Image (tube, rainbow, N blue to C red; front, side, top):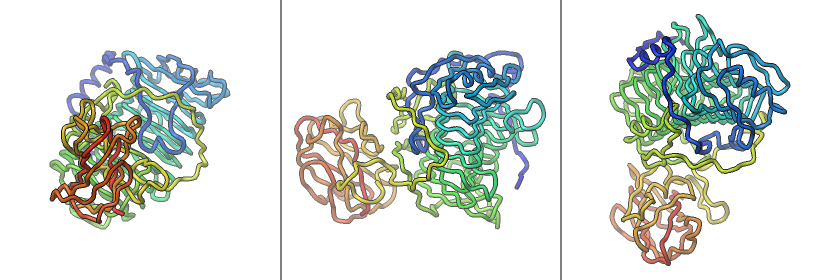
Length: 527
């Protein structure tokens, strides 16, 4: 159902439009050499590495981008294309070759794989020119701006989508990009970030979507339910009327996003879609979560979100907002590890990290922007479009085998604190699902706690030591952090069973150790 666009163009967007109209190129710093690795669902199904290990070429026009694709030995030969300057209709022409399938007036990533497109130098701006991904896999788009792509009027490109994916697309990571329009459908624009026709395993991270009637969709109709496994994290949605995003079927994970000025509806979960919505900050907006403009219900699981000046409409037969007191109506498991910033710091972290020309900064899960670690050398995967869909598992990657408790790790998404910590370590490292990060006490003894906003039932925990410190933990106690009562005691790291207890804080106290202990993960389980 179409709704009137309530678009409001703010001063910053107007300034950018003026700069573009006068031929001024806005200065942008060079991309960091350390680009890190894919996150979220893009890590599944074999992973997403783009053109890693392939030749690196430089392009300043759309035609040169197409020529680079067509110059490969095969359509799957790894390739990194560094883009600098303004790419537009005047410099984007079709190029022919056996390793490509390009077209005029759009960046066409069609029937290819293993490609990275990254902005460098003074910046890469795709002006009124969309990026189209079709029948392709293992694609990375990073550090670019795509603006004012139209589906009607002149010129038109990519059906009006800034970035659009369709037809058997697999494993795409879009990171540190800025996607913007200058109005809604009546002004000739469509979506900023659209996926349809069997698109899976996609992550949108550290990006800005603004000044558009439509943020993006997953699925083109109520019967087109072949898409899913999408992650959206650390993005800014600003001055968007609706579709932030619109989900038709499939599973999506939204965490640590800042939603500001969502004018009509935000996360629209419908037609059986499942949305896991963790530690986001919703501000000055309306109906930011629910099932809208349809009677085909969707589902959501909410945790740790902040709703700051959010208005909620009354429910009708085809309008089911989750608020004013959003509650989960489903349980949704996530198969990858992720570190959650607290929702309260999300506006600051996203402002400092999201969008092109931000130095590719990322957050470490403790509200601290930092340069990512370089991506390790990997063998480039060749995901198959016919890959069967896995069943999502626990929200972390624990040690397999008989030492692993059953169920979901309750520490993911919780809070943490403790006694004095060693320099360079963080309490949050014990609940980020990453065995390469850790917390250490300031000495050889100390305590670290997992805490929840509401009462949580726990019957076991697992203490994982970091590499190089295995066996350092000696004797310990497990305490009910609410009362101080000792639940159990023992020695050595591993799986620990406690009396089934409902509490808000669980403490692991190290009483003795050999050297400095390093706790990589403090996992907790209900049973």
